[in-house]
Length: 75
Image 1 (cartoon, rainbow, N blue to C red):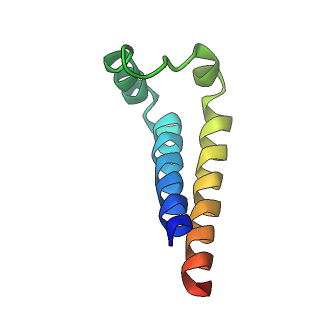
Image 2 (spheres, rainbow, N blue to C red; image 1 turned 180 degrees about the horizontal axis):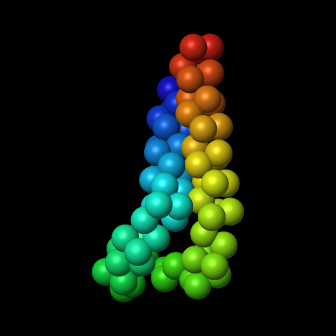
């Protein structure tokens, strides 16, 4: 069941970041400014390609949710 929990975690993380990139980039910038000393800064490159990256992350989250569902049903 480790793979199911890992897939769910990655799926949720990818969905949240993708959602923030698409619909609330200013909130993501604020989070980045607050956590600059702990987490590596989100580069301006990410914000220049925020729509493509956001859609990609949301697709990754759908895939990870599918993987969690598949492994939970199979094992």
